Length: 115
Image (cartoon, rainbow, N blue to C red; front, side):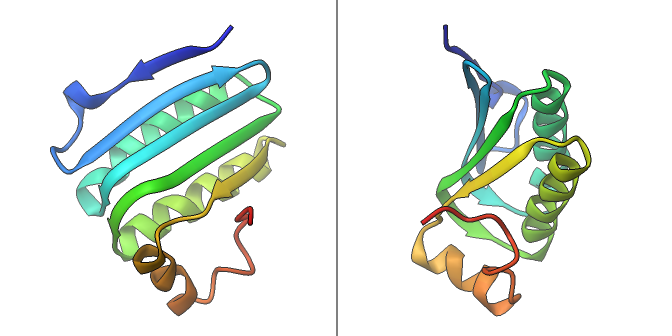
């Protein structure tokens, strides 16, 4: 059974977060702008999902229109927490403009992007 939670009512206007679960896989879908203002909400969403102890966490960034360095940091923190909690993490590819930020930071080969 799939469950979905929409956190839109407590988020910055430029950010959307949707949590869902299908079996042992949890998904955090981000939409809009990932910046300093979004970091606490993303951290809380990742914490909520990891508390369920999924086998796999999918971080879906396909709806992200903008990311800055603090947003990249949020993705790195999610990656570290997943590894620490022994949860497989996959990051769904991002739009080209956002991907360039990860490329510039030389993180494309380091982070678990799926192709």
